[in-house]
Amino acid sequence: TPDDPRPSGSAPGRRPDRERLRALTASMGLPELVGQLFVSRAYGHSATDPDPADADLNQAQFGVRTAAELVARYHLGGIVYFAWAHNTRSPHQIAALSNGLQRAAAGSGAGVPLLLSVDQEHGAVARIGRPATLLPGAMALGAGGSPADARRAARVAGAELAALGIRQDYAPVADVNVNPANPVIGVRSFGSDPDAVAELAAAQVRGYQGAGVAATAKHFPGHGDTETDSHVGLPVMRHSRAQWEELDEPPFRAAVEAGADVVMTAHIVFPALDPSGDPATLSRPIVTGILRERLGFRGVVVTDALDMAGVRQKYGDDRVPVLALKAGCDQLLNAPDLGLAYRSVLAAVGSGELTRERIEESVLRILEVKARRGLFDDPYADEERVDAVVGTGEHLAAADTIAAGTTTLLANPRGLLPLDAASGPRLLVTGAEPPSPTGTTGPPVQVLARELTALGCRAQALSADQAVAAAPGHAAVVVCTYNVPEGESPQRTLVADLVATGVPVVLVAVRNPYDPARLPECAAEVATYTWTDVELRAAARVLTGARRPSGRLPVPVPGRYPLGHGLEY
Image 1 (cartoon, rainbow, N blue to C red):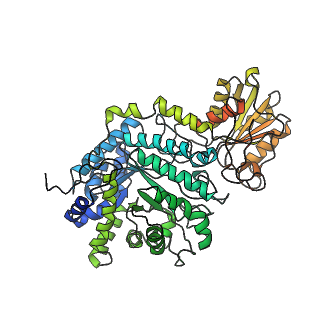
Image 2 (cartoon, rainbow, N blue to C red):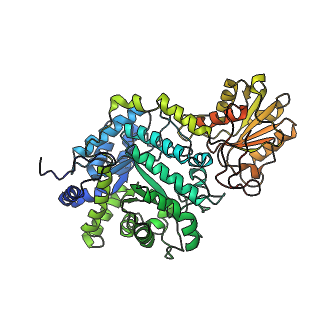
Image 3 (cartoon, one colour):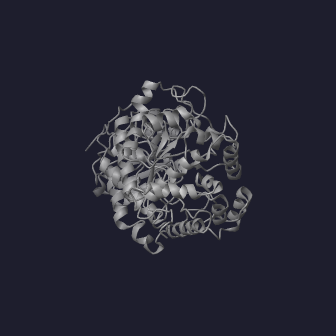
């Protein structure tokens, strides 16, 4: 109708009609307004017909049986998908879930469409697996060093998410990983050089948003030099203000200047930016003073998940959402007790601690992102077109092409590589078998052996406890390592024992490139940055010379290799 305050004509990337959005915000009741701030998990593969166990979880945690009822009860602004919540079984199922949730939103409250979101960084963190396209993660892209490839990867990833009804991705990671001991960022970062990270983060923002998906630069003000995982503790960043401006700020500034729809806060204490001891998520000097005022960010600020230990140590779950809003955050992600958090925000408005105007300010920003990403025009996924977009041959080929430039040859002192695949060398492949990020790829030793065999080698995969005895008689042993710790470890023992056999050992660090510094020197050393199939295929091509290595270390390996190191054939 002519007086309908909801916006029209707001296609992806187009400037929303701010006045119509203001009118919509003003027309909403307080319960509906507050609901728009929350992005919650929900259990089940279906919005209306979850498996009984998932219905029981919804009942226990939210007092409803289905995700659709959850959306209606709390007037939610968004739902975040997780594999462990059984939201991401298959592309067609995801698209149907998205549509069921959007129907629930359309039929309740103010009828505002949901902003459905997911952590699909690719590489080490991905919730949606095959047959969707899985692309190289951030540090692999950092090794490739190509902003065009980073943008293309995000464009492919974004197109597939949009086809599933997901219009917000919690990517890219804009943290600068300068600490090899960082337990939570590591290969999720593009690297240790702030300018390079800035360029790649901006490229990915443009790629995602060019595909109609809101990009989320994270974790502000920077999580790259911490030794505590904020999922289980409260990290402290020791950088000075000058160090922050030099190291941590540039990628976030670049993401903001590239037009990022969203920035995610970090649950870290940063004394040089705010001496109060509050985590950044709850810090007005950081969220409003630095992100809003210094960097000029006008988009949506989303908290990192509120069920993480880092944000729960100083204040109770009733206070955290209120303090996050007072700090300047807009979206409240995955509150551990949604009902408590929702009631707490309502109560804070009732008491005057928060004003309706403050809530409207955040909701307006959220609605602008929804309008910019086309949700008011058409929030639904086209279920008949899923197969035409998700996991297509063109997308899979793009993933392989991008991955081909990321494998880094670190050492080859004897000229062992490339292996002479044409002669059919006998190879033994062994080592770490980390579980797939999505549960749909790997195991890496088996995949690498299969890919080497496909290229002409005779590669046998064996478990680590069998490999040493079986090594003699092979042309080489290829050993996969994964996050080798300092000091003695089973992985170090395995590599040392394999080297002692006299058979040439090719070390393939399948996650952190820091592994070689913690292991005996091998006949050749390679870094892949991810243990998913697309990176292992790329590594196999490098090992056999089907592709020349061109990756360069995006981080230094202390005591072994400098930033930018990488050999060629």
